[in-house]
Image (cartoon, rainbow, N blue to C red; front, side):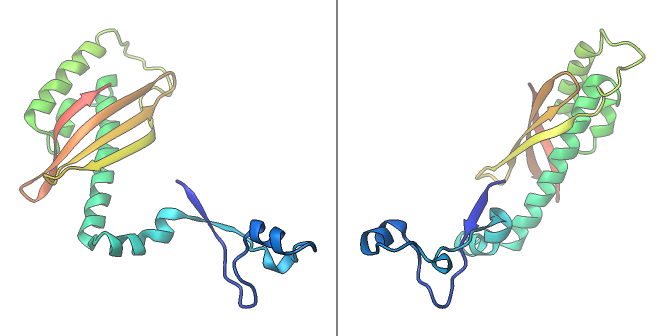
Amino acid sequence: MSTIAISPRSANTSYYNPDVYAANHTEPIPAQTVPETAPCQAPAHLRRALDNIFHRSAVYRTEHRAIIEISHAVARAVFEIVAGYRTVNQLAFVMEPSCIAKLRRRALLETASYTLEPLPGTAHGQIISLHLDRCLSGSWECTVILGFKYRVRAVALKIEPWHGRWQVTDMELI
C-alpha cells in the first residue's frame, strides 16, 4: 500500500513554500509555519472521493470483495491440489470442467515423485501478492503469487459471472 503525506491547514499560516520564503526573507523559518506531515493510507483515505469521481457504486465494492475472496481461496486450493494434499473434486463447485481436467493432469504430473510423508511447510503457501483486473465483458482476471517454504509459484485465474455466482473459467499455473 502506498502512503500519502497530508499537511493540515493552520488558521494563522498559509502554505509553506521554502523557495519563495528563502527569496523573500533572511531570518530563520518560524517553527509554526512549517506544516507537519501525517501519513495516512491512500486507498482508505481517498475511497469516497474516487468513488464519486469515477462513478463507482456499492455493487462494485461488494463485487471486488467477492472476487478477492474467491481468488484467494481458489489459488491456495489449486496449489494444495498440485502438492497432493487435496482432491481435485473439492473445486468442482467453482471451476469449469475444462479447468478441473487441466488441474487433474497437472496434479498427476507433479505428484508422481512425491512421498507419503510431506515435508513440513510445503502444503500451504502464503499469498505474497494479488492483482485484479476487470475486463469490459464483466469478468475478472486475477494473478496470485504464493510463497512456499522453498519456492514461489503463481496462478492466473479468469473469473466470470455464471447464473448468479462466480466461476473460474480459465486457469494457468506458473
